Length: 235
Image 1 (spheres, rainbow, N blue to C red):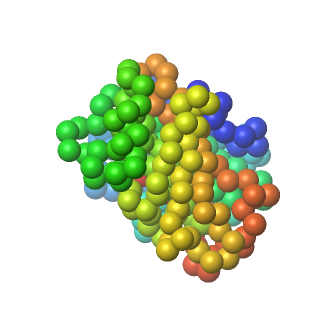
Image 2 (image 1 turned 90 degrees about the vertical axis):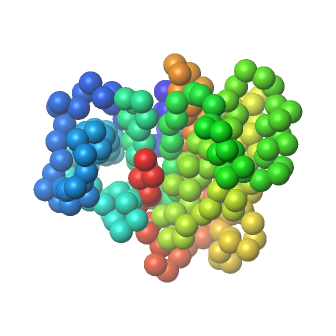
């Protein structure tokens, strides 16, 4: 499903929790989950299996995908990617950096946000839109997912954290897309785009979002210190 939200040069692999028995963690990855509970180890294992399968579609042999200091997966040189999981559904998306310089995906259960969460992740403009949006959709949860995908795309380019309040998201239901405006106070000066665009899908009890930035549209050089080989595994 999530592959329909991304360009054709992005390789995507989805996995179900039931496939976990056929996965494993490589030695270089073990430190990331050394003290994790069994459920987290399983999630991590399946996510890495998805990532390796996605990388194989780009011609990469199976290899470890270790974890960086901010829990971000460290991809092979020249690759950008993102991993997500929720409710037994796991997915990974990867692309060559020469084609795509930023990539983020997220999946959430299609249900309302817990009480009190919406004000923590949104601004007045976003909450006003949700209050007047068509009924029957969990727009708050979609907004949360969109911002997760945006962060995953932003972080490897800049090496900087992006707060929920830093991106103002406009949801466009008509074509299942969204646009994130990034304030000038946090956008780097070297022609970094001031907005990121993404797409969403609501199906089978899940909300899926994806953000990608083509190299041809980026018009910038990676920032010094930016973690361009990875994107954060927020889940």
